[in-house]
Length: 78
Image (cartoon, rainbow, N blue to C red):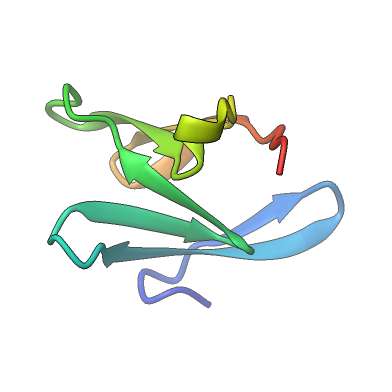
């Protein structure tokens, strides 16, 4: 379980979502082998997250509402 006790069921596999911070102190979500950075313009309870490999044109995204994933585009190109 993650430190918030949130387990995700995705494609029949359990993946654990862990909230952590980057080496620069920015919020990060670890979801299986992938990491997502919080989008800079996210405010309030709803937050958008982008894959850390966005510079490689990875289009994977997450949307959370009160720290629960409500939308996911988990198509990585790496």
